[in-house]
Amino acid sequence: MSAGAANSPAAAPVSVPPGAVVLIKSGFYEGLEICVDRDWLVIGRGRSADLILAEPTISRAHAAVGYATEGFFVQDLGSTNGTMVNGAKVQRTALKTGDVIQMGKLTLAVTLPS
Image 1 (spheres, rainbow, N blue to C red):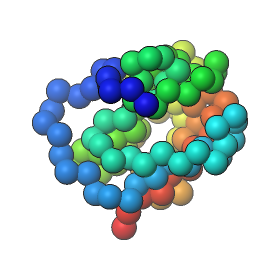
Image 2: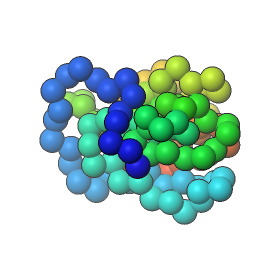
Image 3: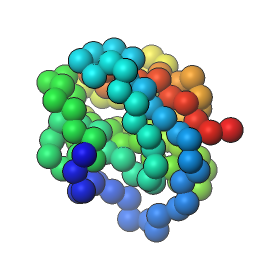
Image 4: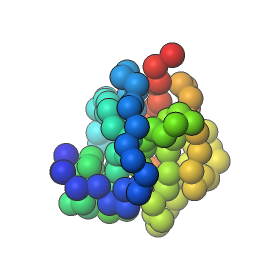
């Protein structure tokens, strides 16, 4: 993971509840667990991403998973192939446990704290 965060929000950071995890369910990185421990976590294949995945079907800064006062969310960052949650293309949407995020060939399962 790199220190930079592409397109990070301008708002002040909020305290992120512990225990949020995104698990990669398919693709080369299957089984990798990502702890969402910050308010803005960029996933992509570029060096400016917080989580760098060498997956050609995702953009350099594909999407961000994070936390704001209203809860956990995923936001597409202008990716070429888009970001889907539970089969629907999204720009930004709230997340709940059991949601499935699709980025290119990667499928990610969401588990959030209660």
